[in-house]
Image (tube, rainbow, N blue to C red; front, side, top):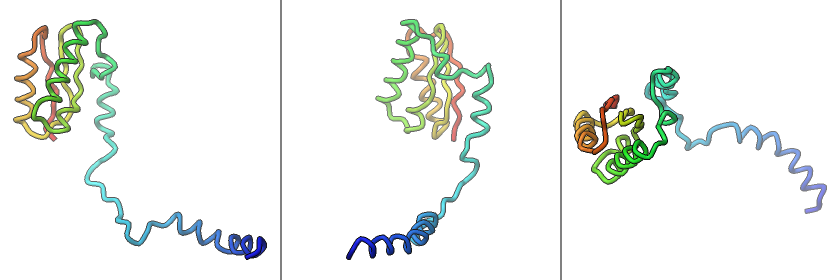
Length: 130
């Protein structure tokens, strides 16, 4: 084909290709949302000045060590991926645990694990069962 024929073909097909790019494929399933996937409520709660986030973690050696040991124990333990991803924040020996876990038994198992750790003055357990 010569260059003029290729150019003409491209110009003819361009609008059709643009429309096809904006339409879902015939085999593509529509997305279904079960509930509020935006986490708006959780995000609003986290903007509250009284709610600790990982940015509130103290950087002194003892608090960092406590958080590190808890995190390592969670990774080694038989926990769900949700439980392994909870927020662990240590400030002056006080540990805050936040986030979703699969079961109430997992909340209890994490509580027992953390209470057994040395150097912890108190625990603020804010874990929630999904």
